[in-house]
Image (cartoon, rainbow, N blue to C red; front, side, top):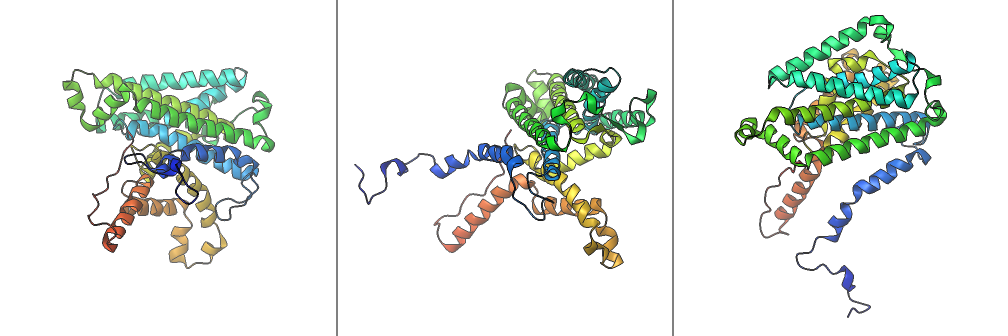
Length: 382
């Protein structure tokens, strides 16, 4: 029986019971999702991070792009961090979803949703075809084949065969063929929610597949492919499944990008685009649940905001030896990448573990703990 001055019986931690604080922390993704969902209604200004209020059209556009590339990097990590496949052609499936949907809208006059479904199917077919060929070789050979496919597709788009791609200028989506609720500055919130839904879908698909029996085989392939073969399994089929799933998410991301930007651009077909995805994954933490998403969001935000910094009057007034490099956004992104990789070898996802380890060492040094704490390990959510 509890008393007025004692600790309530329901809050007493039983021996061996999980820490209530830790149980509450497990719900942070739900809280974060709710916060992200209501952001379009926000009027708070975040100086330095966004140009205007959180719910303004410009801020929502930037946040939507951050969410989109957070999801895209999460899907790409299905190849790099979960299966150990370094593909340089992932941009190809992203561009296939965007260009195919746009072409069905412009040339065939199809309704948007039908054009989007057909564009997604075409993206899946391209991923299946090129994956089936690329995965015939392994290691660096696989990377080079995917790079060759990506370069060929990028060249094809820039040459504008039949006037379908718009060449180096890209091609805009016909506004009258898009749903009215997805066109115009006043509907930016709807586009933001679509990007948020895409991110949630990517996280759910990657989490579900990596925790399936197939996902455990992917982990085995990443660690030692020959050992998987010895167990009587054929890695080729499992790798092809990972390739197609990642390509499907990329094609869907291309359709969302088409809505956000109002057109298809050849910049999304280049190998540099795939390299950006690689940087996002490494920046956030390859093979972790949240790392690629964080890397994609941070990289996209920095890519836009550092451009403003590079063109600011503050940088323009600096001496030439500083002004020239600092006026290049890519230079600033490169410096940021080098700093994070050296300071946080496991990416942003390793930061909480390192903070806990530092706090543990501090308590041990201060004499609060009689025994030294075990060395922390970076947990990968496979």
